[in-house]
Image 1 (cartoon, rainbow, N blue to C red):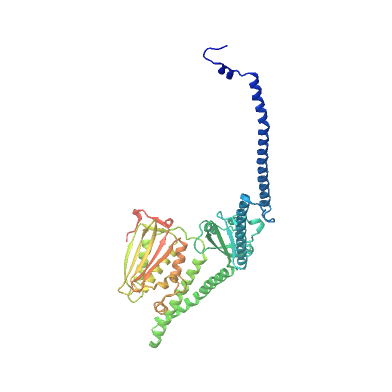
Image 2: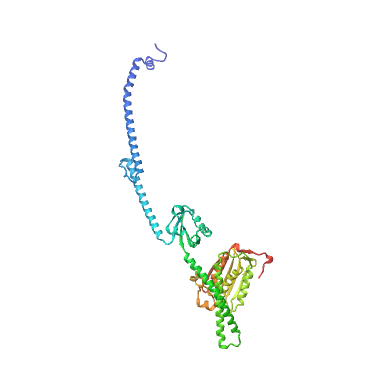
Amino acid sequence: MKCAGFSNNDISVLFPDKTGTRDFAHEQNTKAPEGAMAGGATGLAVGGILGWQYANLFRLQSWLRHRAHEDPPDIGGVWGEVIAIISRIYRRKQFHKRRVMQQFREFRRLSAALPDGVVLLSAGREIRWFNRTAADLLGLRRKVDIGIPIANLVRDPEFAAYLAKPAGNGVVVHMRGRDAWLALFVIPAGDQYLMLVRDVTREVRLEQMRKDFVANASHELRSPLTVISGYLDELVEDDDIAPEWREPLLDMRRQAQRMREIVEDLLELSRLEATADEAPMAPVDMPALLERIVREARASPADSPPRFELHLDPGCWLRGSETELYSIASNLVSNAVKYTPAEGTVTLRWGREGGGARLVVQDTGIGIAPEHLPRLTERFYRVDRARARAKGGSGLGLSIVKHGLQRHGGRLEIASEEGQGSTFTAQFPARRVLARPAAVTKVS
């Protein structure tokens, strides 16, 4: 039978007979065992490789856990290279660790030998480490105080302010529990801080003894000098005194007066040093005070005082102690008059400056060499001792000025050049400046 469009061969392809079907099935059954055997061998090979890799991974993991006590496993191939790289990194790490530990032990040994205490602080000012001296001075305990803010253990307002912005020459605090005085210095070191602790109890007590001695001696000398000066004044005015004694008596009166001035300066300096509080905030008419000081300087028994120039802001007053401000200004003017020739000029400027106020005393005198400037405010320091004795200076004037300015929150600046004169500037903070209304301002 034929179908339209199809031959017998085509039909046989589409509908094979039973004999053809049996041949195809036989062929497939013959190939199946061969594929199964190949797949099994491949699976075994992959499983072996994975097992070997897992065994190497397990050996690596075991060695990494106990590498401090075990040698690295002997594995070839890629795993051997990995273990070799890890071994090098570990040896390098151990080398740096030993080096750091050695340096740390050396640091601890050296810090333990220091006479000062050493405290290592974190960026938040917590204690990270301290040596034995610091533990003894501050009463620190290693297992308790590590991690505690140092401000919680050293409770002092001045130290807290210094710790917030460490700068300058440190701060001295009184440890009331131990009745000791400690000098604390905080040094920034990256994101940490190093605090040095020094016991200055002996120095503080010696300084207090010196102050007490100077104050007591000055008080004891004041009464005898007053009596001696009184008798010398009477003898100089007595017409019955022989002419040959008049000049020696005048010399004795001048020296007695000079000793009285030194005693008065010592008493004033002792009072300023003994007063830790700030000066009061009473209103002071600075322009009037400066005019009075200049009048007194012109009327002084000096041979011939220099010429004065005043540039005063009549509306600029101060809050402070009038007595101390008078002492500050009079010492600056007196110092300028002593070292300025008669043909020279002393200029006073007073007014507002940069939010605060300043007093400038400028002279055209002999000037001061640069090496003397840092020590001018020391007690009894004199650039030219012979000249100072001839002029009657005590060497305490600028020291009184410095301590008086500190009581008012101010500071002293000095600029000078030999042969050109000197400029002394007293700076006062804005909180001390007082503006007077124009209706009550005194115009000089």
